[in-house]
Amino acid sequence: MKQFFLTMAGVFAAFFLLLLIPIMTLIAFGLFASGSQKAVTTAATSKANHIVLRADLRIPMLDQSQKSFIGGNRPSVVGFIETLQRAETDKRVKGLFIRANSYGMPPAQAEEIRDALNSFRDTGRFVIAHAQGFEGTSITSYLSVSAADEIWLQESSGFSASGIGSEVEFFGGVMEKLHAKPEFEQFYEYKNAANTYTQKTFTPEHRQSVMSYIGSIYDSAVAEISTDRDMDESAIRDAIENGPYSAEEAIALGLVDQLGQVIEAREAALEKADKGAMVELANYAQQKDKLKSLSGKHPVIALIEGQGEIVTGEAEDNPFSSNVSIASDTMAETILSAVKAQNVKAIVLRIDSGGGSAIASDQIWYAVERAREADIPVVVSMAQLAASGGYYYAAGADYIFAMPTTLTGSIGVLGGKIVLDETFDMVGYNVESVAVGGDFTLAYSSVQSFTPKQRKAFRDGMARTYEDFTNVVAKGRDMPLETVLEIAKGRVWTGEQALKNGLVDELGGLRDAIAKARELAGIEADDKFKVRRFPAPEAPLQQLKRYFGISSETAEAMAAMQTIIESPQMKALLKSAEAVQEKPPALKASVPEFAH
Image: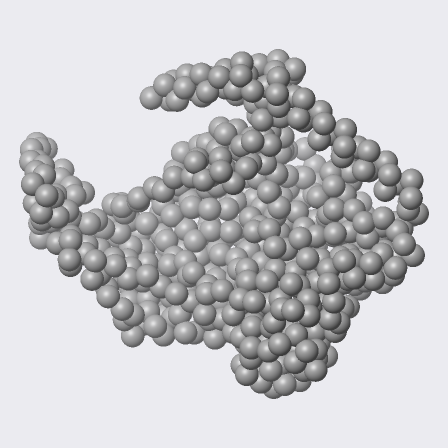
């Protein structure tokens, strides 16, 4: 099957090579030429030592960078943080101009961006943000830029950011109408991901959990915004909760500083930089990446990133895919390779995952244990999510950081299936099962319910997984098992709540985690060190050359096709949905959809 897909990919590539590359090469040449001319003009008409960086928060971000032939180099929170940190020591950089997000973003993303802006400002540089309205009802878009020196708002827009909401889908009624039977086991009452299929509405425990963490997220956001805007929390809370407002009302309440068009805000930023050049953050990052790195004699902190569902096996080696996941074979081997690498003194694990396979999570946890046994400190930086299986392997680290609004915990297990036999009867479709080798052989069949014996065996297996999970947490966090059992039960906590429960050590982001890793590794504050990604990032062009074994010239020509592939029409064509049915025990957290 793999060979089939490789062959088809080759045919697809050949088709484009024969028909489109001549055209695309001309287009690419024209684009590159015009871009180069623009860069030359900008350099010629501005002061080279006065730069204003420009970032666009309206573009959805991954947590970590991903380079693929289809997806391109998508913006990421980690990339944003790293680039701003490097800019803090660049004398040419005078400030930052931001196009604000209008409709909301994941809370921990907004929070970490906000922290990066504060750090950037602490070096004496300015931040100006312009919003074409805070039109969504989520407070997170406003939180992400609340640390700016000036927040501009387009006069014809409004301010609707009013809180935090979460929408949860329930298909219990749909299952009834289709005569489908969800059969799930979950440990315990707060492990509510399966409720989507088994319930028509919230259970009391599910509602309590959701209300608890969105309330915590809201309280954290209000506190941080009040600090940034130098206003009382009560004043911010009242202003947020009594909206929406017109642009004029927002400025009267002190929620924004200036009214004006984006052109005016951009001109104001350039004026602050003595009419310097405005440079895209991504372009600046690429220029900085070309600088010579530290020599091999300096100590290294390994940065190992993981985002998406946790699955068994190796990471997908496909330059045409934009999928993200944490593959246990690849992640475990990456951790072990960092342990063995020259000059690596500590490891930072960046985690953005709601969990997945229990077996895969345990495999990665064991690799973390091996790193610690080798006296390599391991520090975790939690992003938006590090829950369930994501928390499982984080629990083995020496030190854990979470943002106040990170969703974590969900120490529990669930699994099951949806039986479709009666659904198939409605349309005359029939599946007959035959088996040998014992009663459990057809336990995962989708056309027959669990027998009592099968269900007991299945539940017993999940009970063992839950016992393993809670013991891993008790050992890793140095907590009595009884305490872990009390705060487990599948309950989701924010980072703020998790700190109080002892599930994390400190509130902070990636930069804090790297600083702690340096401290645990015994690297003095004044000593130079290098943060190195494991595995080393590979550009899309390199992926193509390795994947197809093609020449550099052909790979460069194929890279020109990215203009077409990144178009909305092509993305819509390539997008596909995948239905997943749980069978073995899984460590998954219920991931909320925050209302905009």
